[in-house]
Image (cartoon, rainbow, N blue to C red; front, side):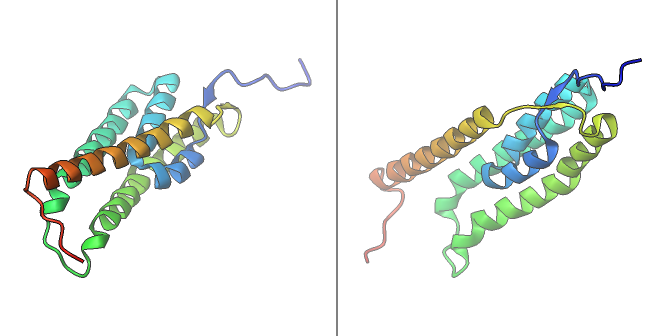
Length: 153
């Protein structure tokens, strides 16, 4: 019997850091990484759950993007998206984020290779950049089409 522990055979993204990075990059980002982890772990039922959250997030965020210019203007209108983002993040964290942490911890503890974060963070930044570009393009198109009026200052 060897006095050395066997090396881990699976490489996963740290589930706790998935939850942390998802606050910045959205639960859609976190669900994509969780889905990759579950595929590596052969947890196909969990892959379906994470796919639900990815789809729900995309529908929610793009639905808001296209509806936002037509929402009523109030003192709180600047906080609509922030409120939706935080509620969605909390719901995802409480249902899927913590569940993923527990499943990985129960199965592997800390005995797994921790994948590097450079590539996912790069894709997260690219996703946010595309979101901003799409938002600005949409608003500019609405203004140029005369559908949306910019109030004078």
